Length: 163
Ligand code: ADP
Image 1: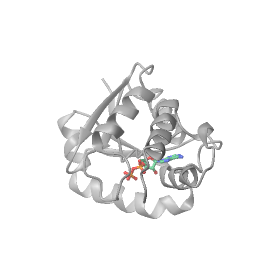
Image 2: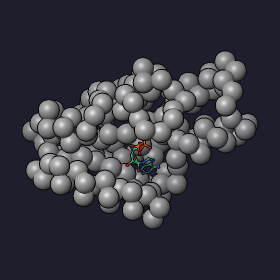
Image 3: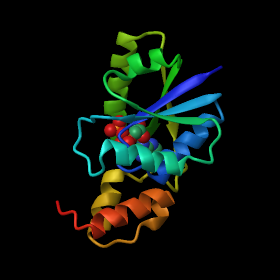
Image 4: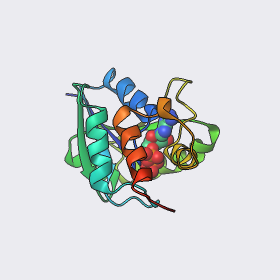
Protein backbone atom coordinates (compact mmCIF):
# COMPACT_ATOMS: atom_id res chain seq x y z
CA UNK A 1 0.00 0.00 0.00
CA UNK A 2 1.66 3.24 -1.15
CA UNK A 3 0.26 6.12 0.85
CA UNK A 4 0.93 9.86 0.60
CA UNK A 5 -0.05 12.86 2.68
CA UNK A 6 -1.00 16.15 0.99
CA UNK A 7 -0.87 18.79 3.74
CA UNK A 8 -2.18 22.33 3.44
CA UNK A 9 -4.32 25.10 4.78
CA UNK A 10 -7.05 24.75 2.13
CA UNK A 11 -8.68 28.10 2.95
CA UNK A 12 -10.63 27.15 0.86
CA UNK A 13 -9.65 24.28 -1.45
CA UNK A 14 -9.29 25.45 -5.09
CA UNK A 15 -9.28 23.65 -8.42
CA UNK A 16 -5.49 23.89 -8.26
CA UNK A 17 -5.46 21.82 -5.05
CA UNK A 18 -8.01 19.41 -6.52
CA UNK A 19 -5.91 18.92 -9.64
CA UNK A 20 -2.87 18.05 -7.48
CA UNK A 21 -4.98 15.57 -5.46
CA UNK A 22 -6.20 13.84 -8.63
CA UNK A 23 -2.67 13.61 -9.99
CA UNK A 24 -1.46 12.14 -6.70
CA UNK A 25 -4.12 9.40 -6.88
CA UNK A 26 -2.60 8.20 -10.17
CA UNK A 27 0.68 7.55 -8.33
CA UNK A 28 -0.46 6.41 -4.86
CA UNK A 29 -2.93 3.82 -3.58
CA UNK A 30 -4.16 6.26 -0.96
CA UNK A 31 -3.85 10.02 -0.63
CA UNK A 32 -4.60 11.63 2.73
CA UNK A 33 -5.52 15.28 2.36
CA UNK A 34 -4.30 16.71 5.66
CA UNK A 35 -5.99 19.94 6.67
CA UNK A 36 -3.94 22.07 9.08
CA UNK A 37 -5.83 22.68 12.31
CA UNK A 38 -3.81 25.73 13.31
CA UNK A 39 -2.03 27.09 10.24
CA UNK A 40 0.60 29.78 10.68
CA UNK A 41 -1.24 32.08 8.29
CA UNK A 42 -4.49 33.79 9.20
CA UNK A 43 -7.54 32.07 7.77
CA UNK A 44 -11.04 33.00 6.68
CA UNK A 45 -12.63 29.60 7.30
CA UNK A 46 -12.47 27.73 10.60
CA UNK A 47 -10.82 24.32 10.75
CA UNK A 48 -14.24 22.61 10.77
CA UNK A 49 -15.35 24.62 7.75
CA UNK A 50 -12.17 23.97 5.76
CA UNK A 51 -12.42 20.26 6.54
CA UNK A 52 -16.07 20.07 5.49
CA UNK A 53 -15.45 21.93 2.22
CA UNK A 54 -12.57 19.55 1.35
CA UNK A 55 -14.75 16.54 2.23
CA UNK A 56 -17.47 17.74 -0.12
CA UNK A 57 -15.03 18.63 -2.91
CA UNK A 58 -13.32 15.22 -2.97
CA UNK A 59 -16.30 13.01 -2.14
CA UNK A 60 -16.21 11.25 -5.54
CA UNK A 61 -12.51 10.44 -5.38
CA UNK A 62 -12.12 6.87 -4.19
CA UNK A 63 -8.49 6.80 -3.11
CA UNK A 64 -8.72 10.00 -1.07
CA UNK A 65 -9.12 10.38 2.70
CA UNK A 66 -9.40 13.63 4.64
CA UNK A 67 -7.91 14.25 8.06
CA UNK A 68 -7.02 17.16 10.25
CA UNK A 69 -3.54 17.47 11.67
CA UNK A 70 -1.50 19.68 13.93
CA UNK A 71 2.20 19.65 14.66
CA UNK A 72 4.89 18.38 12.33
CA UNK A 73 3.74 17.06 8.95
CA UNK A 74 6.45 14.40 8.97
CA UNK A 75 5.24 13.09 12.33
CA UNK A 76 1.70 12.95 10.96
CA UNK A 77 2.97 11.11 7.86
CA UNK A 78 4.85 8.59 10.02
CA UNK A 79 1.79 8.00 12.18
CA UNK A 80 -0.28 7.34 9.07
CA UNK A 81 2.39 5.07 7.57
CA UNK A 82 2.73 7.35 4.55
CA UNK A 83 6.03 7.27 2.69
CA UNK A 84 5.63 10.59 0.90
CA UNK A 85 4.50 14.16 1.35
CA UNK A 86 2.91 15.78 -1.71
CA UNK A 87 3.27 19.50 -2.32
CA UNK A 88 2.13 21.53 -5.30
CA UNK A 89 4.35 23.90 -7.22
CA UNK A 90 2.98 26.91 -9.02
CA UNK A 91 5.37 29.66 -9.91
CA UNK A 92 9.01 30.18 -9.17
CA UNK A 93 7.91 32.10 -6.09
CA UNK A 94 6.72 28.87 -4.44
CA UNK A 95 10.04 27.19 -5.01
CA UNK A 96 12.27 28.73 -2.37
CA UNK A 97 9.91 28.15 0.54
CA UNK A 98 8.97 24.66 -0.62
CA UNK A 99 12.63 23.74 -1.17
CA UNK A 100 13.55 24.86 2.36
CA UNK A 101 10.61 23.06 3.87
CA UNK A 102 11.32 19.82 1.99
CA UNK A 103 14.94 19.81 3.11
CA UNK A 104 13.99 20.63 6.70
CA UNK A 105 11.49 17.78 6.68
CA UNK A 106 14.17 15.48 5.25
CA UNK A 107 16.49 16.46 8.08
CA UNK A 108 13.81 15.55 10.64
CA UNK A 109 12.63 12.37 8.91
CA UNK A 110 14.97 11.14 6.13
CA UNK A 111 12.69 8.19 5.35
CA UNK A 112 9.85 10.47 4.19
CA UNK A 113 10.19 11.76 0.63
CA UNK A 114 8.64 15.03 -0.58
CA UNK A 115 7.17 14.89 -4.07
CA UNK A 116 6.29 18.02 -6.01
CA UNK A 117 3.49 17.99 -8.54
CA UNK A 118 2.41 20.72 -10.92
CA UNK A 119 -1.23 21.44 -11.60
CA UNK A 120 -2.53 21.79 -15.15
CA UNK A 121 -1.54 25.20 -16.53
CA UNK A 122 -5.19 26.26 -16.44
CA UNK A 123 -5.10 25.99 -12.64
CA UNK A 124 -1.47 26.58 -11.83
CA UNK A 125 -1.79 30.29 -11.11
CA UNK A 126 -4.69 29.93 -8.66
CA UNK A 127 -4.17 30.75 -5.00
CA UNK A 128 -6.80 30.64 -2.26
CA UNK A 129 -5.77 34.06 -1.02
CA UNK A 130 -6.08 35.84 -4.37
CA UNK A 131 -9.40 34.16 -5.12
CA UNK A 132 -10.76 35.25 -1.71
CA UNK A 133 -9.50 38.80 -2.24
CA UNK A 134 -11.03 39.13 -5.71
CA UNK A 135 -14.35 37.55 -4.77
CA UNK A 136 -14.66 39.90 -1.79
CA UNK A 137 -14.23 42.76 -4.23
CA UNK A 138 -17.03 41.38 -6.40
CA UNK A 139 -15.30 39.14 -8.97
CA UNK A 140 -17.08 36.05 -10.21
CA UNK A 141 -14.37 33.41 -9.98
CA UNK A 142 -16.71 30.45 -9.77
CA UNK A 143 -14.60 28.62 -12.36
CA UNK A 144 -11.57 28.50 -10.08
CA UNK A 145 -13.17 26.75 -7.12
CA UNK A 146 -14.89 23.40 -6.56
CA UNK A 147 -18.64 24.05 -6.12
CA UNK A 148 -18.69 23.52 -2.31
CA UNK A 149 -15.86 26.06 -1.89
CA UNK A 150 -17.60 28.62 -4.09
CA UNK A 151 -20.88 28.20 -2.21
CA UNK A 152 -19.13 28.52 1.17
CA UNK A 153 -17.20 31.61 0.09
CA UNK A 154 -20.32 33.35 -1.24
CA UNK A 155 -22.14 32.47 1.98
CA UNK A 156 -19.33 33.98 4.08
CA UNK A 157 -19.55 37.19 2.09
CA UNK A 158 -23.33 37.32 2.36
CA UNK A 159 -23.11 36.74 6.11
CA UNK A 160 -21.37 40.08 6.16
CA UNK A 161 -17.86 38.96 6.98
CA UNK A 162 -15.72 42.07 6.88
CA UNK A 163 -11.97 42.20 6.90
P1 ADP B 1 0.08 25.84 2.89
O1 ADP B 1 -0.34 26.91 3.86
O2 ADP B 1 0.59 24.60 3.56
O3 ADP B 1 0.99 26.32 1.80
P2 ADP B 1 -2.04 25.79 0.89
O4 ADP B 1 -3.45 25.32 1.04
O5 ADP B 1 -1.82 27.23 0.57
O6 ADP B 1 -1.31 25.37 2.23
O7 ADP B 1 -1.30 24.93 -0.21
C1 ADP B 1 -1.09 23.54 -0.06
C2 ADP B 1 -0.17 23.06 -1.17
O8 ADP B 1 -0.85 23.17 -2.43
C3 ADP B 1 1.11 23.87 -1.34
O9 ADP B 1 2.16 22.99 -1.70
C4 ADP B 1 0.80 24.82 -2.47
O10 ADP B 1 1.97 25.22 -3.16
C5 ADP B 1 -0.07 23.92 -3.33
N1 ADP B 1 -0.95 24.67 -4.23
C6 ADP B 1 -1.86 25.60 -3.89
N2 ADP B 1 -2.49 26.07 -4.99
C7 ADP B 1 -1.95 25.42 -6.04
C8 ADP B 1 -2.14 25.48 -7.46
N3 ADP B 1 -3.01 26.30 -8.01
N4 ADP B 1 -1.39 24.67 -8.25
C9 ADP B 1 -0.48 23.85 -7.68
N5 ADP B 1 -0.23 23.75 -6.37
C10 ADP B 1 -0.95 24.52 -5.55
